[in-house]
Amino acid sequence: MIKLIIPVRCFSCGRVIASDYIAFVNKVNLIRETENREPTPEEIQRIFDEIGVKRYCCRRMILSHVNLIDDTMAFD
Image (cartoon, rainbow, N blue to C red; front, side):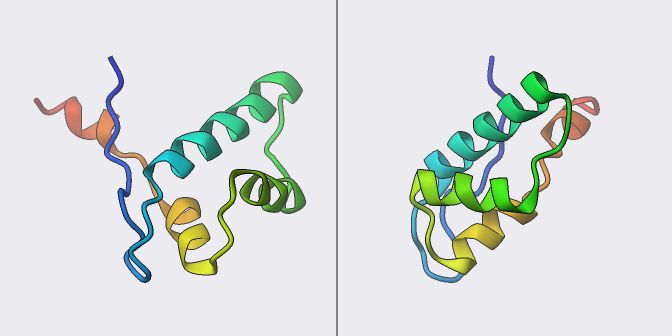
């Protein structure tokens, strides 16, 4: 079961970014698992370019999102 509360749209421009967020997280997790390190800023920029996120406002929405659903589900 996937438990995610992700941003559906960019708050600034209204572009749908939910699928971009999932693709971004998958690529970042792949780097973390295969290379046992955090991605560099250059790699993060490359990932955004690969998934087609061009606007800074949308990149900000994806980068600044904090997934707190696991913490809040503990109180259920």
